[in-house]
Image (tube, rainbow, N blue to C red; front, side, top):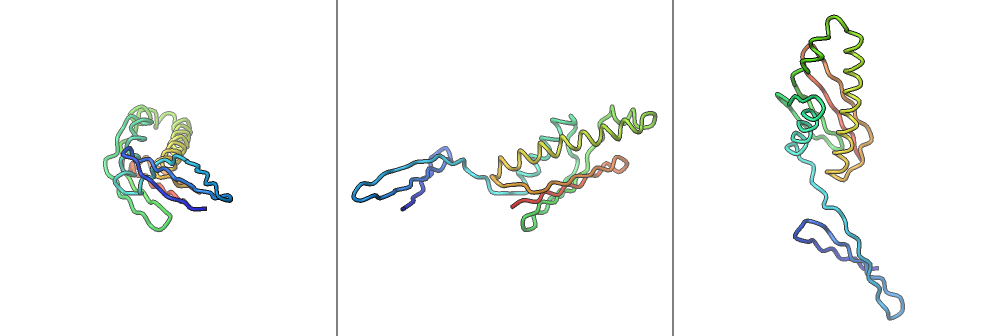
Amino acid sequence: TMMSLKLSAAGQRTIIKRKQYSKNIFLTMKKVKHMEPISKKKIATLYTQISQEIFNVGVNTQKIDIIDNKILILAQSKRMPALEALSEEYRELVMSLDAALSTKYKKMLKQKVELLFDIQVTSLFRDYDPVTENSCTVICFK
């Protein structure tokens, strides 16, 4: 089996496999989505977009490190005003909402990272401290 690779103007790769049986050659073609290289800038943009989508609040600061097969994101963002208003009188409710929102955030981040970079995320950890408004996210991938 011989293989060749062509890249279209749209960034899609076409893999052409040539199989030779006797004297006949059969061609098979498969469209492959163009994989984005993992970059801090793209991760920062994605992280901010998800934050705005879920919390309607952007990220103030971010520090991103990529170490081997891990992405570490340290971020600071404003707390949702509605949660802040309820935090003193309804502490348990706000803690439950924080946990639910964090789970939603992790799910969206995992899906979008896997799709954008064509990687398999094996683990994703995220914690948010409402007092300091700091969060830490660790993404592990294959």
